[in-house]
Length: 136
Image (cartoon, rainbow, N blue to C red):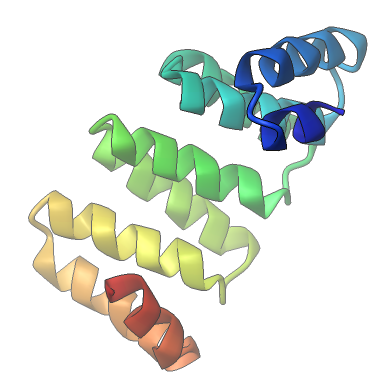
């Protein structure tokens, strides 16, 4: 229902429904993940980070939560933390293209050119087309 509200353009109503669902189902990783997304959209970064971390605590192999946590951290210039989250995701899924790409971007932003090139090389090996699409 919250997703339908969001698609209809009622982000505030979607947020209210997700917060309600979060109270009803505090141990549901998908609900926490969705809260993380909506908090990020609303600019409540710390709440978003907490929700993504909660989703990961509840379901340690929930790769979208790692990716979105890393992206949120990156977006607020917590780049070192973002790189660590992306690397943790790679420990779970060692061929995750978005994670390698995230590591590459985070390392590049920190001035670690060799680490960025290494991560990008792995991404290109896995799927050169993905890397081309991201660069556009």
